[in-house]
Length: 199
Length: 199
Image 1 (cartoon, rainbow over the protein chains, first blue to last red):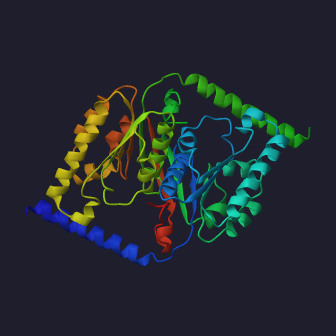
Image 2: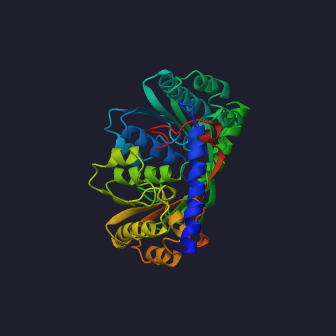
Image 3: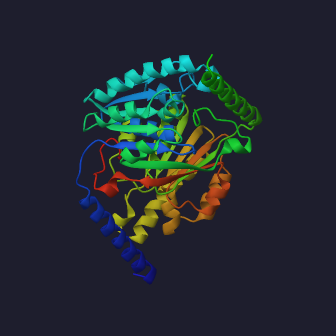
């Protein structure tokens, strides 16, 4: 064995010990609150990746989409026939297309009722509240209502919240928070959004 | 209309104009190189979310998994029957489990050949090189080889690279880079990795 091999082996052994210790220390089992926030690409995409994963084990999943109603969406198409997946979509689409505060608030409250129903259902293993942070920001929903529904949900249920500028209250409640930081983005270089990749 | 409604409408109109201008300015159409890096949760998950999306439109997709070979993986199960998806998995699993530099290097080179084949195939719309950054870090693969294969790939092909500490060369080449920043993680609070969510 060369010196390099020995060093590599020792360094890998140390890493393995560290990982094993951390795995042994993690002994709580329950549903999680995950927040994907930040300005970068990948928030909704990571949520759909988790949806695919949970469906892969046969779990029931509910996705509530708060602002992408009018967009084409490949992942929704791909999974649409799955009997374990339920998708509720806010009727109006992007709010800067409609610019009507009253009708947007009404549409938001309607789809939030679907969310509340999913957040009460112990048979639903994963609930995605996609882009809900904008509803809070625009004042269509209040944080206290959302917080209460999250706190009172079944213990085994995992929830993923996505959107920029997640509220401090959501960050504090969450078990796992990832900030998708925009290091660079093709759009800024004049490259068009791409079917099957960006939407 | 109240003052608040008017303000909201004006602010949304401004946002819409800004977005419309940006969409008009983006006029280049081609495959992208996306990098999901950083220490936070969501890199591989966002890649699988994009895979699901691309499959939703009927595109062909290749996924090469460089270090998660021995792990259970719900998303792979969910999509396994899709004739448009091809998955190549490195045989050894996490390298700190094996700690053998020589056999890991061999396993890495074998699976890289699958990657090279996919990166030459103009019928493959999306290629995911999952966790390849560790192969570069450990020296199992060299960056020049990877760079060349990426540069010579078909113009319409999108590639997603995932893993911590992405090489400067990859960041420079990439069209879109998101750093998944770990704000907090359930594992650090002693909560177990969860089936259907974390794996």
